[in-house]
Image (tube, rainbow, N blue to C red; front, side, top):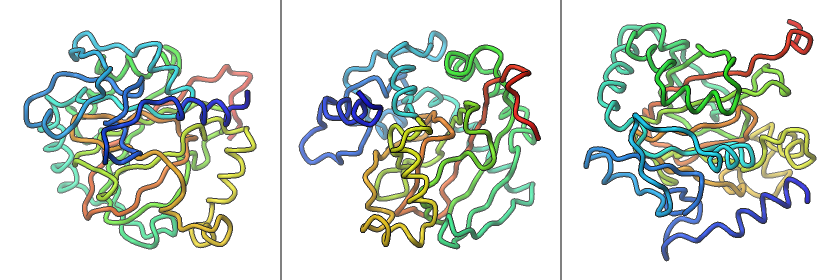
Length: 283
């Protein structure tokens, strides 16, 4: 069975959500994509959990084999409420750094020439945020995926007042080297307010399916002429999230965001596998 056929088969057997639910809402799907962590009532009320997920506490959290298989297959994973207790402090530090630093401002074709503000290496400006790198909840996600000898440390903070067209986060990174991004969205986001959308399986970058999509989605201005639909109508999976949830994804997974509200805040931590010396890419 091809990767694409396997993806279609797995999605076809995923239990459906409640009547009237958004078909792309991960919160309303039972399955291995979602882990549920008990959270304060304010966070819990804003984030529905998978009915089949087993509650765990942050102290005993560990990535399950099923969750790793889901990530390896589809290129993303959602962990519900894993940092709910810390989100107030994380948000305060995010805002403090943005107030004290001078963010980069970009107006790129990828963002339809609208504004994105970025603080590169944001955790370097905050001991509290820097400590996330060695938080057991983070290391217990990254190590099973990349191996215990992974390389970490890069980060960024973003304020989005824009939509974002389809892309992978490779940006010069070797496609054959596995990279993982862990994203903290500081607002509750759904399909109507800029929640991230992913195209499952595009992490399998050498398949004709993934290659064709990287080619056809490369230029936002040409997507409709090539595929016959607007960028926002490309079939995808919408990852609804609430503060305290984290989204884990492979850099090679193609994703986008539409219908975005102003000043959407994102904190991302980036990790990569350590290649053997003989396989290390040349500069």
